[in-house]
Length: 233
Ligand SMILES: Nc1ncnc2c1ncn2[C@@H]1O[C@H](COP(=O)(O)OP(=O)(O)OP(=O)(O)O)[C@@H](O)[C@H]1O
Image 1 (cartoon, rainbow, N blue to C red):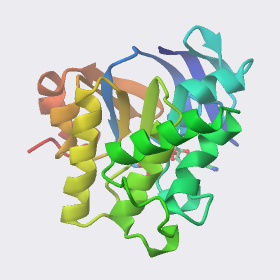
Image 2 (cartoon, protein in one colour):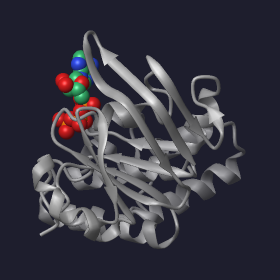
Image 3 (cartoon, helix red, strand yellow):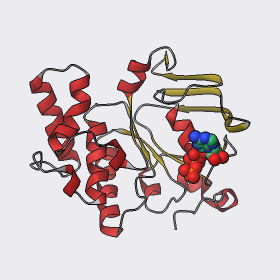
Protein backbone atom coordinates (compact mmCIF):
# COMPACT_ATOMS: atom_id res chain seq x y z
CA UNK A 1 0.00 0.00 0.00
CA UNK A 2 1.15 3.55 -0.75
CA UNK A 3 -0.05 6.19 1.70
CA UNK A 4 0.67 9.87 1.05
CA UNK A 5 -0.23 12.35 3.80
CA UNK A 6 -0.11 16.15 3.58
CA UNK A 7 2.70 15.93 1.04
CA UNK A 8 4.31 19.18 -0.08
CA UNK A 9 7.10 19.34 -2.67
CA UNK A 10 8.55 22.69 -3.71
CA UNK A 11 10.90 23.63 -6.53
CA UNK A 12 12.11 27.01 -5.29
CA UNK A 13 8.95 29.01 -4.62
CA UNK A 14 6.71 26.71 -6.69
CA UNK A 15 4.73 24.08 -4.78
CA UNK A 16 4.47 21.30 -7.39
CA UNK A 17 2.69 19.08 -4.85
CA UNK A 18 0.74 21.13 -2.38
CA UNK A 19 -0.67 19.30 0.66
CA UNK A 20 -1.73 16.11 -1.08
CA UNK A 21 -3.36 13.05 0.52
CA UNK A 22 -3.72 9.78 -1.37
CA UNK A 23 -3.86 6.05 -0.57
CA UNK A 24 -3.33 3.33 -3.18
CA UNK A 25 -3.95 -0.28 -2.16
CA UNK A 26 -1.96 -3.27 -3.39
CA UNK A 27 -3.63 -4.75 -6.46
CA UNK A 28 -5.34 -1.51 -7.50
CA UNK A 29 -5.00 -0.12 -11.01
CA UNK A 30 -4.97 3.66 -10.81
CA UNK A 31 -4.69 6.22 -13.57
CA UNK A 32 -3.02 9.39 -12.36
CA UNK A 33 -4.14 12.15 -14.69
CA UNK A 34 -3.99 15.94 -14.84
CA UNK A 35 -2.85 18.78 -17.06
CA UNK A 36 0.80 19.45 -17.83
CA UNK A 37 2.50 20.73 -14.70
CA UNK A 38 -0.22 19.51 -12.31
CA UNK A 39 2.35 17.55 -10.27
CA UNK A 40 1.97 13.94 -11.46
CA UNK A 41 5.64 13.13 -12.04
CA UNK A 42 6.71 14.93 -8.88
CA UNK A 43 4.18 12.92 -6.86
CA UNK A 44 5.18 9.49 -8.16
CA UNK A 45 8.87 10.23 -7.64
CA UNK A 46 8.06 10.33 -3.92
CA UNK A 47 6.68 6.78 -4.03
CA UNK A 48 10.18 5.28 -4.05
CA UNK A 49 12.15 8.11 -2.54
CA UNK A 50 13.59 9.71 -5.68
CA UNK A 51 12.46 12.98 -4.13
CA UNK A 52 12.19 13.92 -0.45
CA UNK A 53 9.12 15.64 1.02
CA UNK A 54 9.40 19.27 2.05
CA UNK A 55 6.42 18.54 4.29
CA UNK A 56 4.28 15.49 4.96
CA UNK A 57 5.02 11.79 4.66
CA UNK A 58 4.93 8.91 2.19
CA UNK A 59 4.58 5.35 3.50
CA UNK A 60 4.93 2.19 1.42
CA UNK A 61 3.63 -0.95 3.12
CA UNK A 62 3.62 0.99 6.42
CA UNK A 63 7.31 1.88 6.14
CA UNK A 64 8.28 5.57 5.88
CA UNK A 65 9.97 6.00 2.48
CA UNK A 66 12.43 8.60 3.83
CA UNK A 67 13.57 6.17 6.51
CA UNK A 68 13.73 3.00 4.42
CA UNK A 69 14.62 3.65 0.80
CA UNK A 70 15.49 0.01 0.10
CA UNK A 71 12.05 -1.18 1.18
CA UNK A 72 10.37 1.49 -0.95
CA UNK A 73 12.47 0.70 -4.02
CA UNK A 74 11.81 -3.01 -3.62
CA UNK A 75 8.06 -2.42 -3.36
CA UNK A 76 7.66 0.26 -6.05
CA UNK A 77 9.21 0.02 -9.53
CA UNK A 78 9.11 2.91 -12.00
CA UNK A 79 9.21 3.20 -15.76
CA UNK A 80 10.05 6.79 -16.62
CA UNK A 81 8.99 9.03 -19.50
CA UNK A 82 12.18 8.40 -21.49
CA UNK A 83 12.71 4.66 -20.95
CA UNK A 84 15.78 4.65 -23.20
CA UNK A 85 17.52 6.63 -20.42
CA UNK A 86 16.80 3.76 -18.03
CA UNK A 87 18.67 1.11 -20.01
CA UNK A 88 21.82 0.02 -18.21
CA UNK A 89 23.28 -2.85 -20.25
CA UNK A 90 24.15 -3.74 -23.84
CA UNK A 91 21.78 -6.69 -24.23
CA UNK A 92 18.14 -7.35 -23.38
CA UNK A 93 18.91 -10.14 -20.91
CA UNK A 94 21.65 -8.23 -19.09
CA UNK A 95 19.46 -5.15 -18.84
CA UNK A 96 16.60 -7.00 -17.15
CA UNK A 97 19.02 -8.93 -14.88
CA UNK A 98 20.61 -5.72 -13.56
CA UNK A 99 17.96 -4.94 -10.90
CA UNK A 100 17.64 -8.50 -9.51
CA UNK A 101 21.47 -8.78 -9.44
CA UNK A 102 21.57 -5.69 -7.26
CA UNK A 103 19.14 -7.35 -4.87
CA UNK A 104 21.82 -10.01 -4.32
CA UNK A 105 19.64 -12.89 -5.51
CA UNK A 106 21.17 -16.22 -6.57
CA UNK A 107 21.73 -16.95 -10.27
CA UNK A 108 18.80 -19.36 -10.67
CA UNK A 109 16.38 -16.86 -9.17
CA UNK A 110 17.79 -14.07 -11.37
CA UNK A 111 17.44 -16.23 -14.50
CA UNK A 112 13.89 -17.18 -13.55
CA UNK A 113 12.92 -13.54 -13.01
CA UNK A 114 14.51 -12.42 -16.27
CA UNK A 115 12.70 -15.15 -18.17
CA UNK A 116 9.31 -14.42 -16.57
CA UNK A 117 9.64 -10.64 -16.99
CA UNK A 118 10.59 -10.93 -20.66
CA UNK A 119 7.76 -13.39 -21.28
CA UNK A 120 5.31 -10.90 -19.73
CA UNK A 121 6.22 -8.29 -22.34
CA UNK A 122 6.63 -10.72 -25.26
CA UNK A 123 10.41 -10.34 -25.48
CA UNK A 124 11.29 -13.86 -24.36
CA UNK A 125 13.92 -15.66 -26.38
CA UNK A 126 15.57 -12.35 -27.30
CA UNK A 127 17.93 -12.10 -24.29
CA UNK A 128 21.10 -11.83 -26.40
CA UNK A 129 19.87 -9.03 -28.70
CA UNK A 130 21.45 -5.60 -28.36
CA UNK A 131 19.30 -2.89 -26.81
CA UNK A 132 20.53 -0.25 -29.28
CA UNK A 133 18.76 -2.10 -32.10
CA UNK A 134 15.30 -1.97 -30.48
CA UNK A 135 12.35 0.17 -31.58
CA UNK A 136 10.68 2.68 -29.25
CA UNK A 137 7.87 0.26 -28.44
CA UNK A 138 10.32 -2.55 -27.71
CA UNK A 139 12.36 -0.25 -25.44
CA UNK A 140 9.19 0.64 -23.52
CA UNK A 141 8.39 -3.06 -23.11
CA UNK A 142 12.00 -3.79 -22.07
CA UNK A 143 11.82 -1.06 -19.43
CA UNK A 144 8.57 -2.60 -18.17
CA UNK A 145 10.31 -6.01 -18.02
CA UNK A 146 13.17 -4.50 -16.02
CA UNK A 147 10.66 -3.09 -13.54
CA UNK A 148 8.71 -6.37 -13.35
CA UNK A 149 11.85 -8.38 -12.62
CA UNK A 150 12.00 -6.57 -9.30
CA UNK A 151 8.64 -8.18 -8.49
CA UNK A 152 7.28 -4.95 -7.04
CA UNK A 153 3.96 -4.55 -5.25
CA UNK A 154 3.36 -1.48 -7.43
CA UNK A 155 4.47 -0.75 -10.99
CA UNK A 156 4.42 2.97 -11.87
CA UNK A 157 4.48 3.91 -15.56
CA UNK A 158 4.95 7.60 -16.36
CA UNK A 159 3.37 8.38 -19.77
CA UNK A 160 4.02 4.90 -21.21
CA UNK A 161 2.50 5.78 -24.59
CA UNK A 162 4.43 8.97 -25.36
CA UNK A 163 6.27 8.77 -28.65
CA UNK A 164 4.85 5.37 -29.60
CA UNK A 165 3.15 4.75 -32.94
CA UNK A 166 -0.20 2.97 -32.99
CA UNK A 167 1.09 -0.64 -33.26
CA UNK A 168 3.61 -0.03 -30.48
CA UNK A 169 0.94 1.63 -28.35
CA UNK A 170 -1.38 -1.35 -28.83
CA UNK A 171 1.43 -3.73 -27.97
CA UNK A 172 2.27 -1.94 -24.70
CA UNK A 173 -1.42 -1.62 -23.86
CA UNK A 174 -1.93 -5.31 -24.43
CA UNK A 175 0.97 -6.11 -22.09
CA UNK A 176 -0.52 -3.82 -19.43
CA UNK A 177 -3.87 -5.55 -19.85
CA UNK A 178 -2.18 -8.93 -19.20
CA UNK A 179 -0.38 -7.57 -16.15
CA UNK A 180 -3.62 -6.13 -14.85
CA UNK A 181 -5.32 -9.50 -15.32
CA UNK A 182 -2.52 -11.23 -13.41
CA UNK A 183 -3.11 -8.96 -10.41
CA UNK A 184 -0.10 -6.62 -10.71
CA UNK A 185 -0.84 -3.23 -9.18
CA UNK A 186 -0.45 -0.50 -11.80
CA UNK A 187 -0.23 3.27 -11.51
CA UNK A 188 -0.31 4.82 -14.97
CA UNK A 189 0.52 8.52 -15.28
CA UNK A 190 -1.11 10.23 -18.26
CA UNK A 191 -3.00 13.32 -19.32
CA UNK A 192 -4.97 11.42 -21.93
CA UNK A 193 -7.40 8.71 -20.85
CA UNK A 194 -8.04 7.18 -24.25
CA UNK A 195 -7.16 3.49 -24.19
CA UNK A 196 -6.05 3.25 -20.59
CA UNK A 197 -9.38 3.89 -18.84
CA UNK A 198 -10.53 0.31 -19.50
CA UNK A 199 -7.66 -0.89 -17.30
CA UNK A 200 -8.43 1.25 -14.31
CA UNK A 201 -10.34 0.71 -11.09
CA UNK A 202 -9.88 4.35 -10.30
CA UNK A 203 -8.89 7.67 -11.85
CA UNK A 204 -7.12 10.27 -9.69
CA UNK A 205 -6.84 13.71 -11.28
CA UNK A 206 -4.37 16.28 -10.00
CA UNK A 207 -4.70 20.01 -10.37
CA UNK A 208 -2.19 22.49 -8.97
CA UNK A 209 -0.51 19.79 -6.90
CA UNK A 210 -3.67 18.56 -5.20
CA UNK A 211 -6.20 15.78 -5.81
CA UNK A 212 -9.07 17.41 -7.70
CA UNK A 213 -11.02 14.23 -8.59
CA UNK A 214 -10.86 10.63 -7.37
CA UNK A 215 -13.29 7.94 -8.48
CA UNK A 216 -14.20 5.15 -10.87
CA UNK A 217 -13.54 6.03 -14.54
CA UNK A 218 -17.24 6.29 -15.41
CA UNK A 219 -17.97 8.38 -12.31
CA UNK A 220 -15.37 11.06 -13.10
CA UNK A 221 -15.65 11.12 -16.92
CA UNK A 222 -17.92 14.19 -17.16
CA UNK A 223 -15.62 16.32 -15.01
CA UNK A 224 -12.40 15.54 -16.87
CA UNK A 225 -12.51 18.26 -19.57
CA UNK A 226 -12.76 20.97 -16.88
CA UNK A 227 -9.41 19.70 -15.55
CA UNK A 228 -7.80 19.64 -19.02
CA UNK A 229 -7.87 15.85 -19.21
CA UNK A 230 -9.03 14.23 -22.44
CA UNK A 231 -11.91 11.87 -21.60
CA UNK A 232 -11.80 8.20 -22.70
CA UNK A 233 -13.81 8.72 -25.89
N1 LIG B 1 13.21 19.91 -11.65
C1 LIG B 1 12.34 20.91 -11.59
N2 LIG B 1 12.75 22.16 -11.28
C2 LIG B 1 11.88 23.18 -11.20
N3 LIG B 1 10.54 23.06 -11.40
C3 LIG B 1 10.08 21.84 -11.72
C4 LIG B 1 10.95 20.71 -11.84
N4 LIG B 1 10.21 19.63 -12.16
C5 LIG B 1 8.92 20.06 -12.25
N5 LIG B 1 8.85 21.38 -11.98
C6 LIG B 1 7.62 22.19 -11.94
O1 LIG B 1 6.72 21.57 -11.02
C7 LIG B 1 5.40 21.58 -11.52
C8 LIG B 1 4.88 20.16 -11.61
O2 LIG B 1 5.65 19.45 -12.57
P1 LIG B 1 5.48 17.89 -12.84
O3 LIG B 1 6.49 17.50 -13.85
O4 LIG B 1 5.44 17.17 -11.55
O5 LIG B 1 4.00 17.87 -13.46
P2 LIG B 1 3.33 16.81 -14.43
O6 LIG B 1 1.88 16.82 -14.06
O7 LIG B 1 4.04 15.52 -14.35
O8 LIG B 1 3.53 17.48 -15.86
P3 LIG B 1 3.65 16.82 -17.35
O9 LIG B 1 2.29 16.27 -17.67
O10 LIG B 1 4.01 18.00 -18.19
O11 LIG B 1 4.74 15.77 -17.30
C9 LIG B 1 5.47 22.32 -12.85
O12 LIG B 1 5.16 23.68 -12.61
C10 LIG B 1 6.90 22.17 -13.28
O13 LIG B 1 7.32 23.26 -14.10
